[in-house]
Length: 301
Image 1 (tube, rainbow, N blue to C red):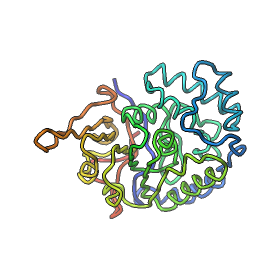
Image 2 (cartoon, rainbow, N blue to C red):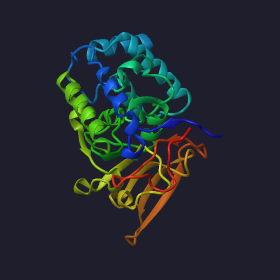
Image 3 (cartoon, helix red, strand yellow):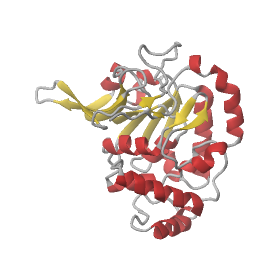
Image 4 (cartoon, rainbow, N blue to C red):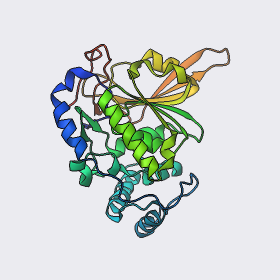
């Protein structure tokens, strides 16, 4: 089985995005504010109904003040995630349901926020499709208090999702104006009551080298394709920590779950598992600040 899904939030440098900078500025003007302030303070233990569409919408309207139309679309996509076994843990189900994806897409795509596939967010990059986000995140088995590093902040949706699983989220974005735009979005949503986003610390930098000052991390998630596992990221992963990363040739990456086991003698053993059981996806490329793509990566079809 082969998946052909161009996905992934932003991870790459200037070479392939120059022609889109003007368009991205136009897209930015289309970003819309949240419909209303959140009426009830964030409670990490509060769980919306998961057995009823009407019950979910009513609960979210009362507690989060969100638009009923988008909540209905979120619920419908949730049912598809469960059916396709892209989300299975109750905490991860809650994280999906509590994250307003419509706030992280551009204005022209707002009505398409809960479609299956990736969507353009400007700067030549995309917001990952909800199925990939859910499966990659659930595969990490994130626990409360885990320190999580994301490579490729992009739209901000992935980190927002993570903030409903842990209060320690660190995210790196290589594209400076996109990093600034997303940070501003988080800050606005925080003022409107999404206090869980206070857990997100962002940085404009080259994600290939990780975030040494904040290492080690319990979990690392990479949202762009590469032909190898960056050694700095593996080094910054804690003993018995996990990383999810798309690895493989151009346009056909296997999404691997990497577990860094520490043996009794103190040595490390890296175990790999393919979360799509051999299926491949196509992610935007992982490139470095020095310019040019890392060998063997490019945009998929």
